[in-house]
Image 1 (cartoon, rainbow, N blue to C red):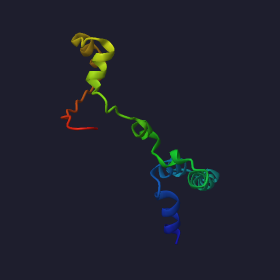
Image 2 (cartoon, helix red, strand yellow):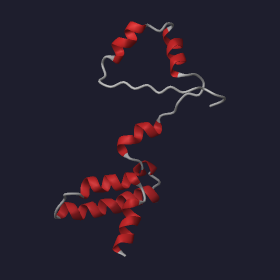
Image 3 (cartoon, one colour):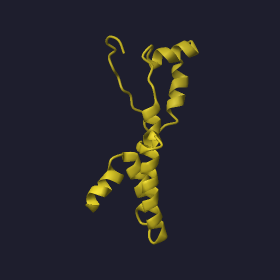
Image 4 (cartoon, rainbow, N blue to C red):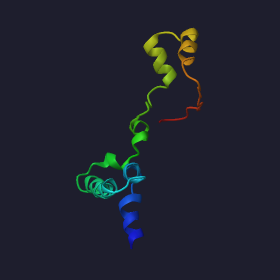
Length: 111
């Protein structure tokens, strides 16, 4: 029964699970008891108050909110905004990063 309650309150939504464990793990005494109330509040806020962002992983929220353009590719957008593609400026900009990766996709049909 205890395991079912734990799964129901903690494991159903990854964001709630991470927020709860961040407070609960390693806690002792009053903080541990407060973490249980925090877990109840997280569930109440998510399910009753409709605060759906609590179900998302906090560190990944920027990826979940990003909307990609289907009208033009990133290269086309860059060229349209900057008139030309200056290779030296591009290399200078990339040199700020330790790792750079590229994904190449073939555009077929509508987005």
